[in-house]
Picture 1 (cartoon, helix red, strand yellow):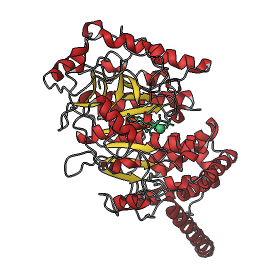
Picture 2 (cartoon, rainbow, N blue to C red):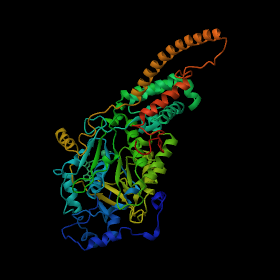
Picture 3 (cartoon, protein in one colour):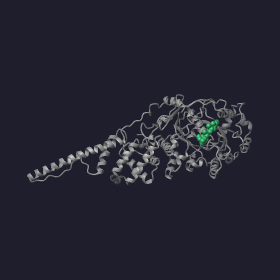
Picture 4 (cartoon, helix red, strand yellow):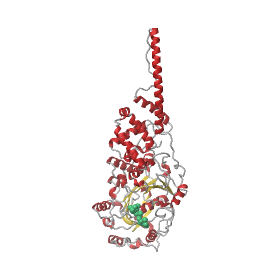
Length: 583
Ligand SMILES: Nc1ncnc2c1ncn2[C@@H]1O[C@H](COP(=O)(O)OP(=O)(O)OP(=O)(O)O)[C@@H](O)[C@H]1O
Ligand SMILES: [Mg+2]
């Protein structure tokens, strides 16, 4: 795996021999001059900005070469690069470098959501499916053609986008609560002990016990589908703590109790909706439409955001699941899927170091599976350095510099860019207008482009929320319509443990009967022996288990047999504890 390639540490790695990675762009566009076009204007908004750093920059590039050549993007999208922003030069996200991840940062209201909206459209156009969480409901408009938005119209005119046309994009709506889209679920077994511990807010000892519960279930091919299964499993483990402790390690009643309380809290916060079947089939996130455009999967996250840990853990599970189940593909012409992670700071807030390391590992390795991850955050300092170092494609919107922490963020953001001698990044970053950004994308070789001040090309679809009727129509016509909408409760741990308990009761009764019979038989034998004056060896009833350990073993064997249909024996877990490979 060549995960630590040039992009592995892209931002600080400034290579002086590629001073003009975007030069071909400027020459390329010179041929298609449109006299009506104007160069990207020096920032016009917000009024009252001190524009002198920009004013100093613009004259540094001969105006004629900038003014005349800026052409519209090609009507048919170029599959090799996506037109994202226009400054003194056009800025393209190189398709084959799009799996080197990215960052979209900026203070509130500076244009982050519109930027990822636009980027999602560009990916869709070249056939790359996208997954994004819609934190405020304002991404749903991607499913409708744009129009009637003054800010967009002004920006289109300002940037001279002559062939700009409004259009809708193919969307699949998902919703953990099943209200604003197709239900999207995982199973307890798939989520695994690491993420579940975070979800339940467990301490190390309690997390250790949960590991044991999973190990026991995995070893015995027990599928834990939903919270009900986990609850039964915990009860079983609690009741058989002694014998399980001998084989697996210490299981204390206190820890089992704490996990049970965590489950209750999770259920009360609506987390129970995360688990169950039919669980998400990842290939449903990687669809293209008849015209070859990638589907944009939009997860309704407004309600979900009320439980930030559930939100972050669910997305982390999805990332981990993608990583564990997708094959290695090496370098592709374009990603297989792009994942936008809004409110990315939630991923790292309060995450223990060990988990942060694992997240970093998954982010680093997932690109060789053809998945690009784009983090969206108000403050780049919210993303740990190790992860930040993995994010090759960057769009930095305005940052405020009010507090010392703000100022630190400005400095940090400024120093991560490849220097542009014409641009005082630290000053400009606080003066950028809405939809304006400092942009640096990786070039074809994976070298970070020189940072440019540019305006993000506005979306072609509608910016904002949509009517329920529009949403329902899209859900009804979606390619996954009917696949996830009805929950399934197939035979799983809860049922099996129940059956097991019933069997145990039956076995116990049978054993009691057998014992009585045996005693009687022994007595008869003794009597006969006495009569014959000879002895016979005593043999115990075969069917009677005499220790709990034996009983568990019995049960495990039966369970494994029963699960032969549904789960392989010995489930294997990956970096973040999720299952590797599908059942
Ligand atoms: N590239 C753009 N072209 C045209 N208008 C834009 C652009 N970017 C942003 N806007 C306008 O600015 C508004 C705010 O942008 P946006 O919602 O993307 O901000 P944000 O950074 O996501 O804010 P928050 O952090 O509060 O979510 C948009 O509704 C839109 O009207
Ligand atoms: Mg936003």
